[in-house]
Image (tube, rainbow, N blue to C red):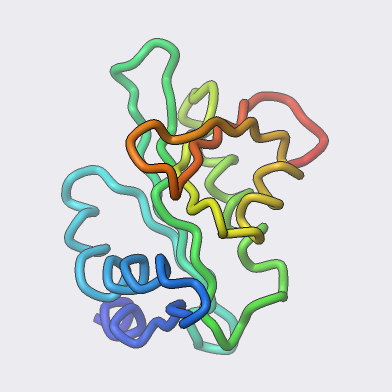
Length: 147
């Protein structure tokens, strides 16, 4: 129950990044309910406070096995502490353990922090044909010094 309460208070919405409203709503209102459908969720805690959240889904029925990275979010009060990187690396390690060949994610075009992190982790971007405000990023997995 503490997790649900912490998620209800999680704050990642920023006025200068309007796409974060939908993300915050997803985390606060629907995230734990999606675990039933196979979504894997991890929280990053420090001093009893929820600092960040990551969520992903392994698609084991595909060949090769893929991981869909749905969420990497850091609480506004905890930004710029490498929590986002730690969460993304945790996602990558879990996906690797599950045998995934890559992680795919959809990132808002103006989300400079996540796009930069994905680039550092050897991600490759392409335009999202369904929505010009987003890019699709694929990070290949395997043996790498980035982990």
